[in-house]
Amino acid sequence: MHNTARVAVVPEVPYAAPAIRGRETLSRAGAALWRVVAPDGRVIGHVRRLEHPLGMRFRAERLHLATGRFIQVGEFWSPDEAVASLRV
Image (tube, rainbow, N blue to C red):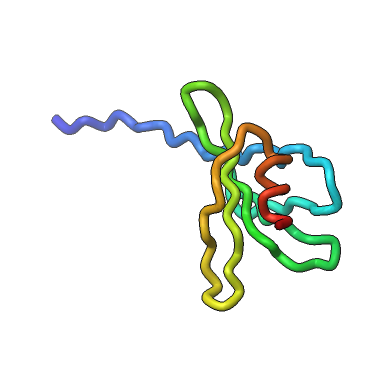
């Protein structure tokens, strides 16, 4: 006999963009990843939502224009702190 039990596949539900204060906007780049867009339309980096035993963390990743790669800036407890780290 063959085991014909079906395994339920649960689709990945994207998280809502975190609310941020500031001039930048966030646009979805993945289920837990957002592009940080400057007021003039330039992409300045990413904010990635991470699970942590003590709560949600937000990783800031800056876009390095010369290479086109993202460089990790740090992990923060709020999305505002993550976006602020990309402004500098």
